[in-house]
Length: 256
Ligand SMILES: Nc1ncnc2c1ncn2[C@@H]1O[C@H](COP(=O)(O)OP(=O)(O)OP(=O)(O)O)[C@@H](O)[C@H]1O
Ligand SMILES: [Mg+2]
Image (cartoon, rainbow, N blue to C red; front, side):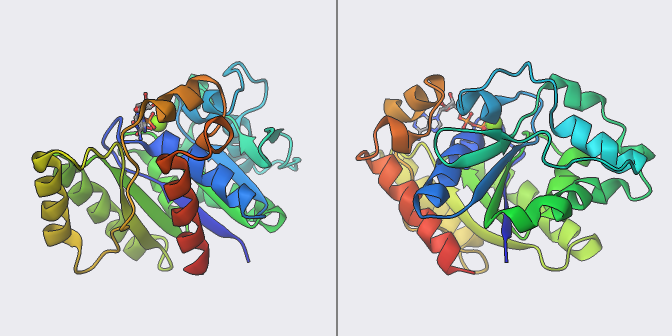
């Protein structure tokens, strides 16, 4: 049985893509067959795994085939990284996709994923920082959601929005959707203000939602890895961020 995990938060710059890359690579290190899907027109997951955004075949083409009901090869968009992770790239052209033209506009990505999920143990989807039809598709196609957030005051606002949307999509399209957990990224726990903000998240959501004990520290190596086109596990596997992404990946797998 494969598991589809969205890395989502409508707030920008909270570590979604970094978490998608580093968790995908962690799952591969744990011996899993992994696909990472870039659903964001910024194409950051695509670049972060070392590929150009100028790909002939991207997620957009796969979804268009679904919308049109064509007979097509669903593996055609897959690229292979050097880290044991396959990816489906995206670029800005994805914003032109006419999801509304489908019979079930919210379920186009699910239709595509259903064709390829048998090939993988884990499928990780990197989301764009906005609420729109593509992210509805991502949540409708996922089994679980990991919500990265910076431990900052405005983070709580973002958490409220994404958690509300997950609940709404669960009730409308995807009864099996669950929240895997809230993950603190770019953590500067030595600062009192950060500690206070983490406590506020715990108080607001901790009763109903898993909040990972381990967080991802703010460290320049995390950003450097992406600019080199590799995960943190290839760039500096002994750093705390790499170790903690690996532990969280184990926890996600143990969670079924
Ligand atoms: N733990 C970390 N320590 C330091 N820098 C980090 C860390 N995680 C991510 N970054 C950097 O912070 C910036 C934002 O991270 P990232 O791109 O992962 O966020 P995002 O949520 O995907 O952003 P967007 O909403 O634009 O898609 C990037 O420059 C990234 O390299
Ligand atoms: Mg991103």
